[in-house]
Image (cartoon, rainbow, N blue to C red):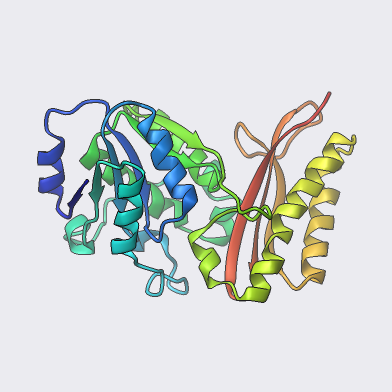
Length: 279
């Protein structure tokens, strides 16, 4: 496995190759990331993972400075699952001058849910992802469903800009108790880690209610928020939406997703669950 730190070196290493599969990450890897690498390997070409903590997607009060940077460990993990190349640029390499040219995704998709509570987040995500796409020139790019709205925003960008890239979705990796794996889980205390599974449990409860025939989306959302608050959480949202566009569902919609974001102590966790509602 090659570890490359400059755009020029990566482009030279990829010269003449075809069918590259790309997995962008911010490092501090866990089994969920490694599952994405394994999924990328199924496409037959060389697999490139990037490790870059992207300042553009962090608000001033968020954890950019304290976000764990574990490059050595990350590279060992990537090597263990057969990644071919790691692109780990410095901030000066990827942003040698202020990034004044940015990507503004569709507000109808990007300014709701996560975008409402993290203004500008998806601008930063799309800008760095498009820049990485231009550098790596992959045939396939793999993103996890755990960041469900991000996956949809990236797919929308690829489609609207006619990029010759297939966006592949990897299923959310979970711990044995159901907690979605996240690099930020490491911020949780022992007691918070035990409580954290409640977020996934609330999504499953919504799914059970929908399968039982309930269609009062707003009430289901409010009930889940109330239960989380009573357990000591600070929810940003619990929402039932259409999978196709993350808009509020109508009575005839069957392919749904329940999404949630909430703070437990100082740690903000997100999760989602795809749901198929019977007619």
